[in-house]
Length: 270
Image (cartoon, rainbow, N blue to C red; front, side):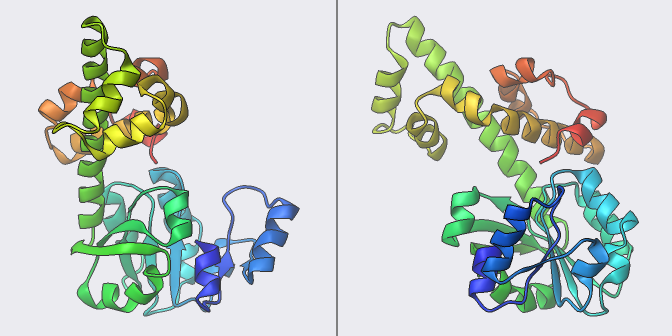
């Protein structure tokens, strides 16, 4: 993200989430970015602040307790890429009504950011999104304005629930195939050419199979499930059949989050 922003001519200041590794600092400075030591330094004189942290609690801590919002100039914008609760976005927005807060959770991976094609699900006012779009297009494509503030988070939560459910259905399909004497590799290869093909099937097949997928991405899937369940509970929304399908995911038992409520959501947010 920093690479693409600096290449586009933006003046970028970076606050890292972990202690600054000297090699990482040199790498960022070589790109033309400035590494700063605090949230206020990152926000000072910035037209826009882009927030990419791991948890809901970190968003609240940095924005509401860490001095970030207070240091932002009137008329500037805060873009929250972290997948979090719509309620957290509203709490952050209430912290400084002179700043435009836009939620823009992402769908994709680091390779998509590097290629400038990560999907951004953007919630915010029309004026704020229009003003931010040229910057967001540096690393995002498509940049989808999906509604008012909080709408991006709502759609991302549905996306994560559906993604997890797809994986659950695929895992059960592999189990059925094996009971019928069909090897997983043969089944996945054939299904890619049938009416049951899907993007999730392509991802799992390319990674070698269901077990291999969970070995690499199981922690993240489990955390996404924790987020979805916790926030759905907070908002009074029912997962319905999606929840029942997600329950079959083997990663949930191994991660110890098979029946997560509000506390688990805070622990496992991504």
